[in-house]
Length: 451
Ligand SMILES: [Zn+2]
Image 1 (cartoon, rainbow, N blue to C red):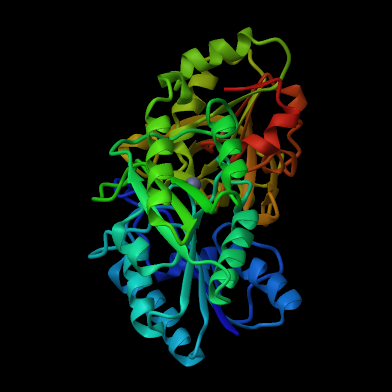
Image 2: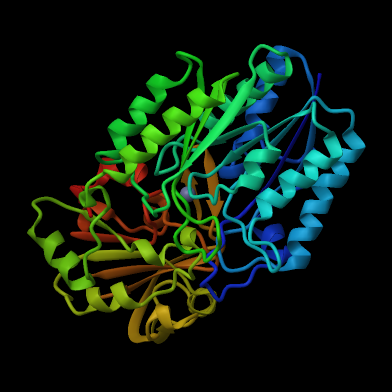
């Protein structure tokens, strides 16, 4: 048996001014064939899952390119087409194939392509023919188009938000594709379109129990896999929205009945299923009212994981208005300010202009008397089994407030964003992270509360 694996992923906020070209992929993560690391990265987890099964099951694994760009704005047509064609050329060279496994995100939008993943899967089908099993893993924040469902045999999305299960779902995908290629199962897929935007988190109810029940359904009564595509709200594309995908063994009607039942259940979730979005001053008042510390506040829509800059000054200004509160905020994207701080060196006091630069939604820049607290050549932070590099970074201090500035854009996945620059979070009443929910698992153990 011959199996190909490749990965092409980013998440596109079509409202963001941060345009993406090929260099954005090459700078974030670009692994030509044979160079993917041993650890799974978020969207390339099928590489690791396929390697493990190749070792136990004895098939031939042909590795293609794996690449990822940090979520941002539209991808250029040239970037998408060159990366797509690179993978397709690798597949042509690897033929004949029994299985193609893809690690995708599912919300990539390029100039001229509202549905990059649908295009990639359809082009792949043209090359490999009808008998090769095509499987794709998606982030749950994907735009599940009909084109994708028609082109692929098996689609599995992350179930957990925060995304702690990218490797586990890659293992599910690999297993289902192997069983399908061996003729042990016949995956039949049905999709129910909720015709709504209905995201939920699995770190809280009712999402937690709902997803626990999905796990219980899988592997029983002919149900092979259940995935919920939440959709990605910050994209103006036709297929945006929440959809439920069910794969049943040889029985599309059964899949359709379950998909509709689960979709209607999601639509009936109360409004409280969504995370409340507090105004900056309200969030600070709330944190102060909580016993214990630190209270971790998520600046959810200034998360680079959602394709925005991550340089908003709004929460910094709100914290500066409460100078009596020991607080920390990070990591803000400001390569220019980092360069000034690195050149000045730790201990230097000067008046710095920082953040609030990229877009109107970033707020106004801040000018303040700061002290450079610490600098680093490369701020590397863990997220589950993966590591993200934020490049050169600096911590600056304004009174009781510590601020982390970074050269690279990435979510504040875990406490080392602060602790590696000498900031002790237990001394802070408030810690503000630039992340929507991926921070949750790593910050929960040190947080008095998360809001
Ligand atoms: Zn996601």
